[in-house]
Amino acid sequence: MTQTPRAKAPAERRRPGENPASHASAVAIAAETMAKSTSTLDAPCRVIDLSTGLPSLTTLFADLRPVVEDPAGAFALYVHLPANALVEEHFGWEALEAYLAVVNNFLLRLAKDTQRERSRCVIARAFADDYVLVMPYAEGDEEIGSRIADEMNRHVQVVDEELASMHEVYLGSSRIKLLPRIHPERMLYRGIQRAQAEATDVGRHRLAAQTRLLDRCIQHPDTFSMLYQPLVRMEDHSIFAYEALVRCSAEGLRNPHVLFNVAEQSDRIWPLSRLLRRKAVEHIKELPGDALLFINIHPHDFDDPQIMGPEPYIKAHAERIVFEVTERAAIGDFVAFRSRVDALRATGLRIAIDDLGSGYAALSSAAELNPDFIKFDMTLVRDIDKSPIRQNLIRNMVAFAVEAKVEVVAEGIETPEELAVLRELGCHFAQGFYLARPAPPFVTAITPRSGEWMRPPPRRAVEVPPAL
Ligand code: C2E
Ligand code: MG
Ligand code: MG
Image (cartoon, rainbow, N blue to C red):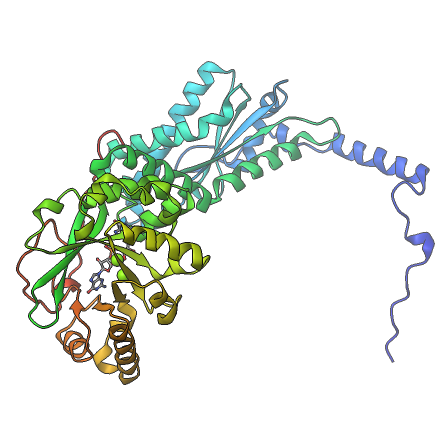
């Protein structure tokens, strides 16, 4: 039979301070041991990183005693390079070495310049190809991280444009002040760890960098252009309308989903959407025949007082404009949302519910908004010719829409088979790469092309204006 371990006798469970005599002697022993041992802060030799010639982080400490003992304290900057693996995968290890040499030269020069201003600045190679700089603290140091990141980005851009498109650098910093009861070496470690944690919080840095880029793009409206994708009548492929779709030329914001995601998270939807609505109507007078213009509206735009104005350049052409409202907007405060949609319609605008079937609203609640059009999401459309269940669903949805006097657009059509089935199911209009890709204003002839859309577009050079 196994015996349960005996619980510790009360005498063995002594808490610190319970026995003052033995606690004091333990502290004395620890102090004596510490005095005898060599602190890393006093280490005489160091391990050198072979590719950069810099000391490794663990032995950097030998140079740091005078820095951390500065009365103002020390300032640690952690330089994180998250793209290294990507550079190596795309361009090979030689390219990564060359890239790191560029970064290394930049940081060495920075350390030298800093040494000129302050007595010391120590640089070391940290974990996973990252770098640490430690220097005596100076007023305003908290700001230098983003300045260094900008300078470094410019430097890499000048040296190698292709690498620059992958290069990412994130800086974290922390101020280190010695405390009388804490070992200086430990304070230093904690400071470097804080700087590292800040630098490696990539999501936060990425959003901050993307937000800065977005702000600069909004200040330079020419970074945005509009493409227009035709919507055609099912019966004869004649063009009935065009949907305006934004393109941003700044690397990193090219994809509209990324663009709106960044704008959403950084609270920039209103300024972005105002600019894009103005852009979308720029060519409205050149619209062929009596074609309509579909303009996408972001759900947050419905809280913007300017849109309800309505804006003069929208009001002037209201009878040719259809606002596309994604079905996501309909969730939330439905009554308030419905009254805004009604107010817009009263100005002469028409309303389409976009992306229906993508998973949020039911057809019945979308119909409550009394739209002029509904657009079936491409997830319903994809391979519809092979799915009797979805065919049945669409047949019923079309019947419901026709009953409510709503016209139906099927978007994202990529094959002649999808087009044929959707026509047979009663959809009124068709949109998709099979018929026409989004293009500059305005495509007037529809020549269906199966499969051509699948070719990836050629890789383009970085296309940001010089001011960015
Ligand atoms: P959306 O409004 O549903 O637009 C349709 C998207 O599907 C467009 O993507 C279009 O290029 C793409 N598309 C069209 N036909 C096909 C096809 O046959 N196959 C495939 N795979 N895709 C097709 P895009 O231009 O990347 O826009 C994505 C989304 O970004 C839009 O979805 C819309 O929600 C938003 N967006 C684009 N431009 C604007 C804008 O100016 N303002 C606002 N608020 N949103 C916009
Ligand atoms: Mg749309
Ligand atoms: Mg859509």
